[in-house]
Image 1 (cartoon, one colour):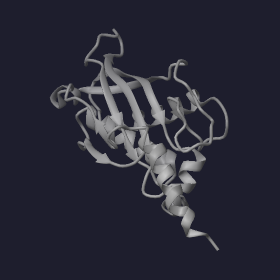
Image 2 (cartoon, rainbow, N blue to C red):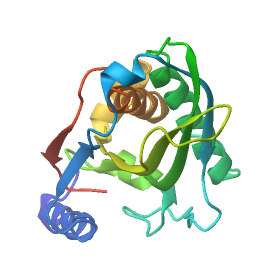
Image 3 (cartoon, one colour):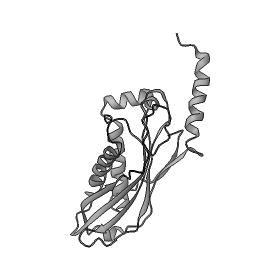
Image 4 (tube, rainbow, N blue to C red):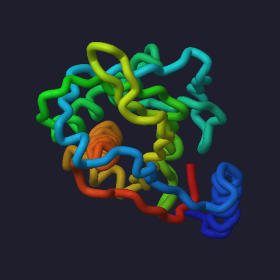
Length: 207
């Protein structure tokens, strides 16, 4: 039998740990209106170049909120920079498929942060936890390299599934990777001016 007198202090401790990761508990999906849809409709993205700088720190610590730029556990242990590259490249390619114009362009993305959930956070949290994702993006001419948009900082935060919710979601195929990929895909499509505007804010204890 679980001794309930320990549950409240445990929940408070978790709240304090996660609350320290964000001062306001407010998260967002955001980007600037730097791309004119009337212009981008003539583009066709022929290459997506994602850069995940080696300077971004990685943590494999199984704590509620590891202090690092990259926290990713759903793939097997390996090069986390390469794994993040693969996820974001796939998402960006899918988001860019909305453009079918004649002018060939490249999409340049540089990761700032990719902080998903540790095993501990995903298993034990409830109604809290955030996928904290940020990167810069720019469109350039595929032949000349001429900038066709300014460098824009994009936030793609996403409320994470945890606890029982995560277990149920995973049984239905809604893995962290799938949810993050779909979200970033929609963010890229919106930023390019030919997808639904998914910008918004939400409050949640996280990371």
